[in-house]
Length: 372
Image (cartoon, rainbow, N blue to C red; front, top):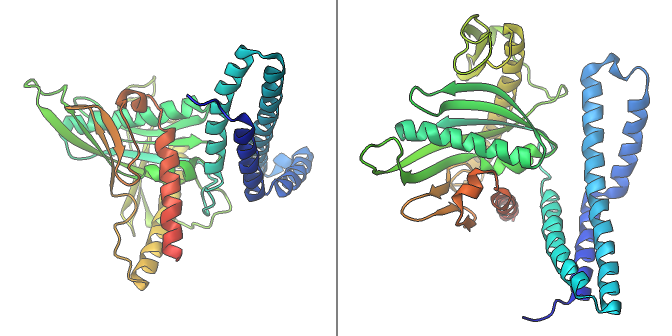
C-alpha cells in the first residue's frame, strides 16, 4: 500500500475549507452573530416571546455553524503539526494516529460541504415528519414504526431534539401513522430528501407460513413554520373534532377528550395531535402542523404550475425512492442516487447520513439540470 501523501491531502482539505468558508459567508455570519447577540442582551427581549425565540434560535444556529467550521480548521492545523512532529521523531504511532485523523477529517469536511448545498428557501428550518403505513397490512404498519425509530435514532445520534405530536397505533402491531418534529437547524433541508415511498422486502414475522412479504410506507417532510410566515387560515375553514387519546400513555390517555383533529375544509387536509395533556395544547400543536402542511401544499401547487408551463414530464420528487431488502439478501438501496449499503440493521439504527448526503447532492444536480 502506498504511503499517504499527507502534504497533498492537507492542502486539499484546506482548499475545500476555503471554498466552504466563501460559500457560507463567514464574515457576514459573524456580523449577524454580533447583531443578534446585542438583541439577546436587550432587557425587553422577552416582551415579544415569538421574536425572542426567533432571535435566540437563529443565534444558536449561526454560532453552531461558525464553531463547526472553526473546529474543523483547528483540527486540520493540528493534523499538520502532528505529521511534522511524527516525521521529525520517526514516530510510527503518531503517523498512524495522523492517518486515522485524516480519514475522520475527510468525512467531517464532506459533511460540512453538503451543508453548503442546502440553500433552499426553507432548508434552514426544523422538520416536521409524517410517516404512514401503506400497502402490506400489518407488515406495513410494523415498517412504519421501524422508519419512525430510524429517524428518531438518527436524531439522537446527532443530539437533535424530537417532539412527537401524534401516533396512531395499528391493531396488531406497528403504526398506522405518526407525526413528529426534529428540532435542529437545517433539519428540513437535510430530511426533505427522505420524502417519498419506502419499500420493505423480508420474511414476514407475522406470517405463520414464513412467506416473503413486500410492504410500503410513505414519508412526508415539511418545514416547521415561524411566526413571520404568511399562512392565514380562517376559523370558518377549519372543522375541529375532539376525541380520547389512544395507545400507550399516562393518566390522561383514554380518560378525557383531549385529542384534537383539525380538518381544513377547502383542501381536505387532516391533522391530529394527542400527545399533549390538554385539549388546548393539542389544538395549538395541531394548528402548527396544519399550517406547515398547507404551506407545503401551496409550494407544491406553485411547482406543479411551473412544471406545466415548461412542459416538465419527469417523475415528481417523492415517488418510490428506497428499498430495504432483508431477504433473500441484505441491502438498502436508494433508487434515485444508486447509493446502497449491505447492513440494513445499521440503517434502521439511524445510520442514514450516507443516504442523506447522496440525496442532497442528487437533488442539487437535478435542480441545476432543470435550470440549464
